[in-house]
Length: 322
Image (cartoon, rainbow, N blue to C red):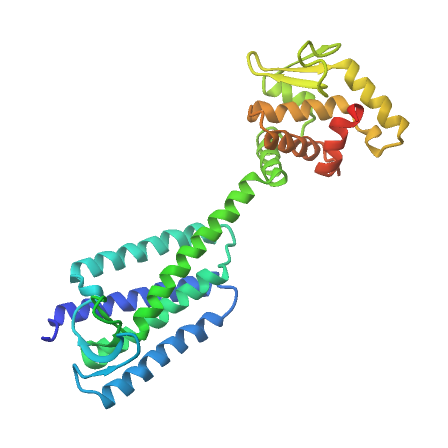
């Protein structure tokens, strides 16, 4: 295999340096500790040690058979990663660095800290790139030695494997982050707090009656729900068109008496305000699913500064029907 042109070699070195520098800056800012340094240096050192032994004891092209159709084969790789063109490598490198820059600026504002999987993946990439970088600078080619048999199109080295494992870990990290984000997006307490913060930023810390007025929501009273709702534990209702909150007086009074008889701390709560606040959330999110109801409970308690758990609110809403 002929040596790579100098321009390709220089671009390969520049690409590896850019990746290493970008990831080091990223880790210095967002990693929880410095364990990644040991992992990166350990991979690079192990990679170079094995290559030194292979280069010292084998000739180029010489093969040492191993179990399962695998072998240790000394190969001088003058090509870029996976035989890609130099333009592909530079384009991919610049895209990665640009993505890291955008991500760096965005995450800096949120006090982000990396998870273990992402930190380990970045450390493996750094270690792998250092191993490849040393080869390019010292020899002008990359030493490959892992031959996985006739089914494999390429020969590999420890640095290559580190980068491949890093890609798997990054994928796992993204999945883990997405699942956590999905849980946060559906957690009633967190969704409610976010909604209340948005309300207070726009309208200030005002009571539910004033907030309803500011939102253009009418508040009306009715003795009891009409059939078929009469047999359900309903004490208020939000009507979309026109935006109206209906308070059902008899069920509200019945609940107030029950809470007072039981000596519940909830007896001191202004039930009309609580129900108005509850229905205001449905004005923002008119969904009728169970999650929307639980979030509305939490929104009402948060808006009124009530120290009431979701379970207590659930008990409140069914208290006079148990």
